Image 1 (cartoon, rainbow over the protein chains, first blue to last red):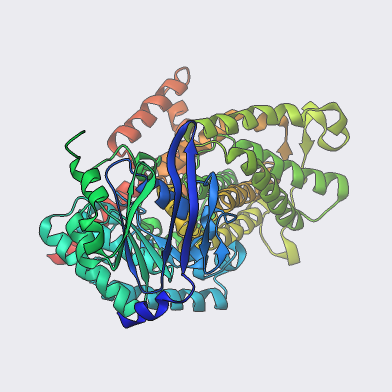
Image 2: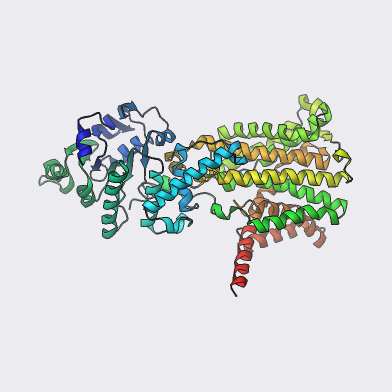
Length: 265
Length: 339
């Protein structure tokens, strides 16, 4: 990944700066900072309750940090409402799959293109020429994504009946349809078997390499993180514990202590 | 998996809806239905023509509710209020200001869109049964609002207004009833086509995304608040046009014609027709217009009870309404073709 290494010296694509989140009296995140560079796969790890999901929800604007800032290409995202995050190039998937269950695979992915298209209810009702052209373009993009993720056979199937692994791929396709610069993946390996996790790892790497998407991977599955991440940030009790290459983080005594416990505990 | 943590995100949709592909009829079936609707008034008596016109009017109102509930997943027991606003808009404009009846339709459509859109703003904070209650309040308030003293010079107060029935234009050789039927049919078809287009478009997909999962919809860039209120506006606008047509056809508006009872009838029509299935709207409308009459023929004294039993039977046998019957017919036909 020479491209990623080149980018290291440049401004980060996404910068998390001293972010704290306080719920009532509980400090869920305490002054966490790290940078994400273009083309990276960044793994965010930590035991349960470490603050991974809290940080993830700050990035997708479901939570408002009590202090600190999050910059996307130098611009703060904290003034944007949640629905205006997709348009600046932040796409996401959900921990337990949050698809539009009653719609077809194709429609789910089409909805992913919402932020990249425009329309109004009158033009849509009249199906004006420009609306039809826009729909043709969306369909083309959707078909390309379905082919890319091997979902063509189920394009017209309702999502609710599909196997879990397939639903996860639909979610990826939907997230990619937003044309993300950064893809936030919330525990993508959850609920997958060993074989499926392996396939998923390859897929994430492929997406990064072929579609030039930077990936933030929040994950419990150590094997997956260590095999595909370029850079790992470890959290515990809302603080950043360690940061570095997978090997560095794995060897960090604090990280080992957080995961395995120490003798005096 | 920690299902509890993400419960909000994976929450099941409040309304069980159909996939979009099954939302409309095939071309062949549509043409047959269209031909029947065009030919029907040529062979029946005037009173039946009147009933058929009301069928279309209620069909439109049920369609409007279907866009709101089947499309965007929001409940409403307040459709009678929008219907009333539409009806009164036309009646007042026609009788007090001599506006042409056809011109009053877009006016009440736009006015009701605005009312629905504005009502949708506070309703944004509510969902499910709570939203149903808020709309219920609107429906209950409307007849009394229409009786207000200071509005009486326009609305005619408790007495209501008599609306003049329009003649067929250009000297067309047809009765007033027949002309109104075709006039209503043309508008119904136009709105139906528009509604189908809308639900198949980017906006319609945004409605359905919100219905299925609000948080995911928002993450995809959908302005949930905007589309929820738009759905209310569109639904109210179409209901308003239905109300206008209803006022012209019935030739009379009065506050007590538009009580919560009407809203419940429309809701019932939507369920019987199949939630989210647009062609079902007309079936649902037929149910709320003709079944009470049938019940009365079976037993005058117990017509309400008979209606209740019939309704219960329908819900018990085909819980997904007319849509279920349509799917069953489709499968049966497919089986015969295979042989």
